[in-house]
Image (tube, rainbow, N blue to C red; front, side, top):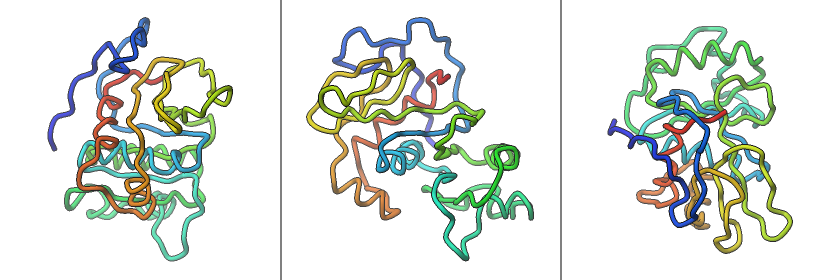
Length: 204
């Protein structure tokens, strides 16, 4: 796995003044949650976070698990197989949560994260103990939220100016969104590459 670039104090290049002024870096994360009020961003953001690394695991704790698919809950009960403990090849792997409690999920995720290069978890609630990356859709006008913390900013209509600290993503092209929603990865994407700094940023 290629090394991720180190964190930088200045975020949102071209958007002057957005910095982590009082935040102390915590080093590289092995597990990051992702949350967004936008349903599409909620789904594709964890994929982008792992795809920018090259190889990793996306765990979906929001969607209802499909029947016949092995879930994180089953892994927590049976224990992971050797094939599940670490990636057998490069790329992004997907795992549905199933009906699993937070405590069960944490124990199993920490076990998987010991050998997976990166793990992102799609979450919706506020009780998740790992660092969570808020992905904020930049809706036009007054619809743009005013967060009290850092986040990742996604333009929805035009470019716009973030209202807080955090990376500013390029526009998510429809073709890239369709591939991600279908479980496919684009060969090259500026949007995917723009996620790299999140792994070294201090998320509350």
